[in-house]
Image (tube, rainbow over all chains, first blue to last red; front, side):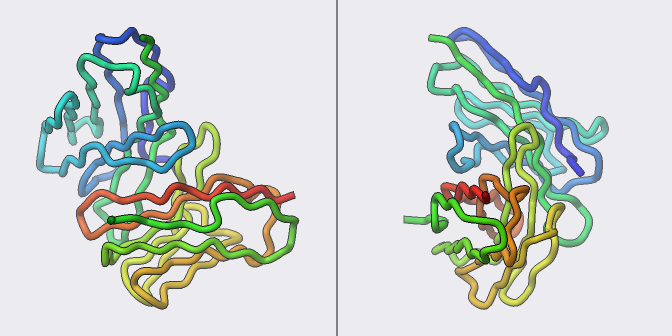
Length: 112
Length: 111
């Protein structure tokens, strides 16, 4: 079953604008991760936020986590054409084991 | 260079012919996972391993086998492949509580 669900499914913006993607999940988590994927390539890790953290920054990326609403958002500021990619959230469940559940992703297209 | 290496990168084969996709990591990670990626469905976890000789099912394990005889290797075995296993497969590794490192993917086509 899918735990993380991204919204929107696709987003098209102009270079220089900000892009916001949202992720919702269903069960308690240890952490939530955001990954980027360029056209069928392997996923690259962007940011990991733990369940006791509310916000994290890395360069032009800002991630928030609201565990009461079971949701997270990824903000990319001052977007560039090179940011065009698919973005996925993934959650590691709090229950035993090591199941990681990915959402279906948001496809971001940044027009130059 | 830290990396996860999958082989082959591309494979076209026929129904029922056993195949193995290899995965190797050089970061001494305890955890390794296999995922398949299908359009509109994101990545779905097939199997994962928490250490040598410790494996468990993910969300879509049917039709797959894995083994973890050594820490660095985590092969994915399709004993009798079927067309519904045509997909893009990713291996990943990490240490506990840290993000995963992904291989470049293996595109399997089963006719």
